Image 1 (spheres, rainbow over the protein chains, first blue to last red):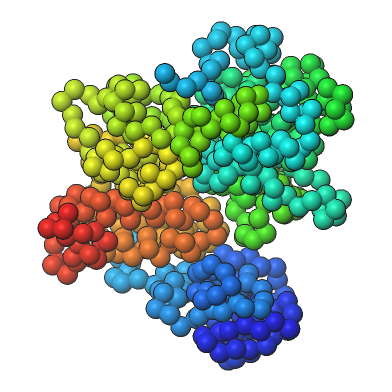
Image 2: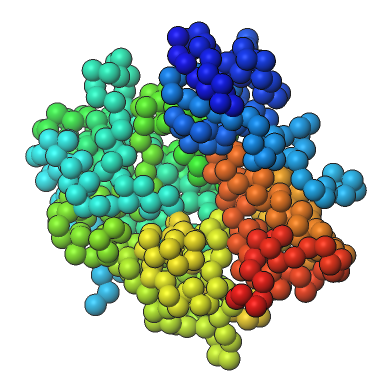
Amino acid sequence: MPTVKINGQEVVVPDGVNMIEAAAQLGVEIPHYCYHPHLSIAGNCRMCLVDIEAGGRGPDIACNMKARDGLAIRTDTAHVKHAQVGDGVPAGQPPPRLSDL
Amino acid sequence: MEPRILTARWNVPDVHNIDTAMRHGAWRALPMALKRAPADVTNEVKNSGLRGRGGAGFPTGMKWTFVPPVEKRGGKPVYLVCNADESEPGTFKDRYLMWKDPHMFVEGCVISAYATGAERVYIYLRGEFAFIQHRVDAAIAQARAKGFIGKNILGSGANIEVYTHLGAGAYICGEETALLSSLEGGRGQPKLKPPFPAVEGAWRCPTIVNNVETMAAVTWILEHGAAEYRKFGTEKSPGTKLFSCSGHIRKPGVYEVALGYPMTSLIENECGGLYPGRTLKAVIPGGSSVPIMTPEEVSKSTMDYESINTVAGSYLGSGGLIVMDDTTDLVDSLTNLLRFYAHESCGQCTPCREGCGWMFKVLQRVKSGEATDLDLATLKDLADNIFGRTICFFGPSAAMPVQSFLKKFPDEFFGRVHRTGQVSYANIGAAAPAAR
């Protein structure tokens, strides 16, 4: 039963869960697209990128990150908001022209 | 005197045949290595300070120690994979090494397999290297006939087989995990790390992936000793390295120099200098993926892993030196590079699949003269959003040229777009002209 920290809040989670599930316990939603609890980890939508405060190097994807003691992540930084990918569109201003897509 | 370690036998006629090669010193290191314990061989390589020549520059001896000990492997075999994909634009050293002196490289593969406990070596060649595959296969067959490959090599009890495998010519298959996917028979797409290949690689068994040039250097180190190898190069980058020099130079080609050699000397002496009447505009020091360098940075840099990084924030990479003189249109060059990356992205993860194509399209607009400076800000933002956020290093490899071209040559780009006044030098990551 590792203890992890999400946005500064500590939470004890069952062994073997990933950080998307761990965050959900706190009501923190980490956006994801290719992750599904019944499928193997593909890790290719890159939507669930989070910053790592302690216990690793970041940014990294929450779906492939097993909860372990001492791990502390942030999902609310400007960096994470910038990195999050929605509908295959990396956040960015100004966006490419429609005719380009 | 120029060092001749990797290129020592390149000018010997017929040296790709084992009898000629052995008369000139090939296959002497293997019997010496087999008399020592595998851990001892690994230590020798570790002490030599040899760093991987594929691009990342990771210490080779240390990489070998990441293979789990035999009791923790659960009966799984260890594989040694030699990365002969050499797909980085501007790099052509491995093809010469394998073509000119295949025995040095094959011998290195066998020694490395012995050190890491691998019984099988796979040499993964790119599709375009079919002609080299024939030569390497011939070298392997000759070595097998002499008892250097196969069962119970030279009575030591070591069983090592060497195979070649031809890829289909994809850039991404030079990335180690994509190479392993391709070798396994799957699509050449990178895998998530962790687990790292040394723990779980080809067929989920511990796998060491090394570059061709690294293997050849291992042969020399085992014959002459780590201390002798350290006499070349610098403290942190010992030894010699092959540089593939191309671009606007009078003598393009592959040159072997000791690491720590001044970059200006390499361009002026080995490469024969620029064409008459031209001046240097920029240099890409380590294959197309690494950040570009300005002439000022070139004059301060030496060819080793540390100097290029501290002076220019760039990397030695695979040693593919691309020299550009004042006739070069850098907008055109970058567009050309991004055409390549957009084409070669494996399409597995979103930022790279979408972003590389977008960067290419924005660059085409800049090149055509229809863009505004807002497009440059978009370009910078796209590159920043790809860098470090992808499964493998392809994303950063495509982003770094864009970031560095904009940062170091902002006026080339601002001069090609309509100015709205909304985008400053800082917005594209460059210093203002007054500060430069």
